[in-house]
Image (cartoon, rainbow, N blue to C red):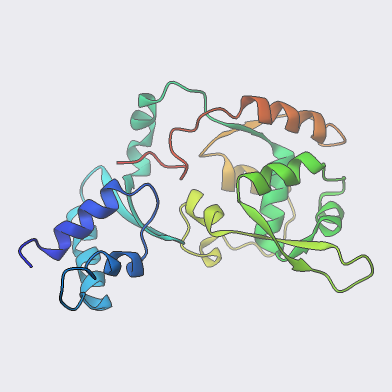
Length: 222
């Protein structure tokens, strides 16, 4: 092979519109007539690329779906100025619900409402489902068989996580406001408002103001 494997991998990750797994990187070489490189060779090339970017404004980041090249968080403030659209805005109700699903999954809507102490509007669940941050992971074996919700790979990718084990450790969900702010205030703006039954009205406003996000991963692309 005339072109170094490392260069091919770098170019593929750079131009891909989603993270690339090791299996997808190996597949790049399967039509060249020979044996594709072994997984360890791919891993070594990725490790070398990670070293190359160590002191630069971009980084090779592994998330749930694979590897991507992105701007470092330390330079995001300047890179984000390339996009003139307003950042997407979501209500605290939505972020609280997402935090509860992330930490207590699999969980039913009724259990979410019990933790929050207020009903969860259908708009909150629909918005999280439409963004593919949560999914129906099954049904609880109780009367009515309510759906149970869990987070998805897209949730992990968006928040720069390789797995749920990378979430900050919390003994229990005591202060939902602090948890929602700590976890989710970076990629978008939080709409402040009453926590009670204003959830539905706030979510309608969120939908109208979401707009373009610059990058679906919550980080500026390289």
